[in-house]
Amino acid sequence: MTNVGQTEVRVGYQSTTPQQVVRPIKFAHIVLRTRQYREMVDWWCAFLGGSVRHGNDFLSFLSYDDEHHRIAIVGLPHLVEPVKDSVGLEHFAFTFATLDDLFAKYEQMKAMGCSPYWTINHGMTLSAYYRDPDGNQVETQVDSMSPDEADAFMQSDLFAANPIGINVDFDRLLERRRQGVSEAELLDYATASQQ
Ligand SMILES: [Fe+2]
Image 1 (cartoon, rainbow, N blue to C red):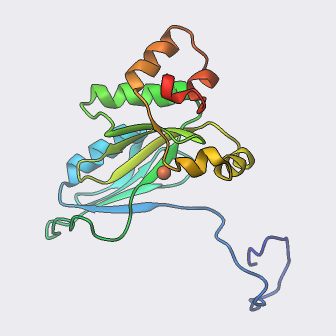
Image 2 (image 1 turned 60 degrees about the vertical axis):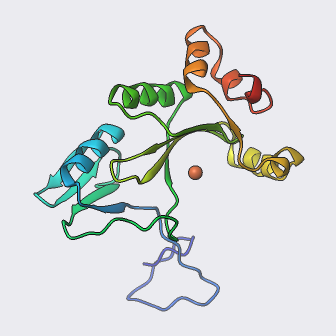
């Protein structure tokens, strides 16, 4: 049966019509290739709070959620350094359940000697961006808005005037959170420049 957004029982394969756009059911995984195989596997296991579900001396499948492997690492010694300013992947992002979880990840990464290179309130998310040992850019975020609220925000003059966001200091936000300031207040975009 083909996933065309509705339940259909078919006997055998039948081609879809041009109107029946077939969608994937989810985003499954990313495979990163590296020359620093062990460093990358260790970093990603720590970052994800995950483990190697299956691995050998050049290929590891990492598991941390309901997917068999969301990240895999392949070690290939002959790889060359990436070309600076080349086209391709900018970053990919992981959403945390709460701001406190995002802060906990921030503290854990910092204890590993890995601080974010950018911390910003994007309006619809509060985000911290990290680089893995190879320099791949990874965003950690917590949603501040529902998708509909984010749509409205992105159509606002506020967003048009600054589509990137407002840089924030995670240590300062974390300290205020420790003092009892609510998650909602710390996520608030309108007051982010004064946080
Ligand atoms: Fe992003």
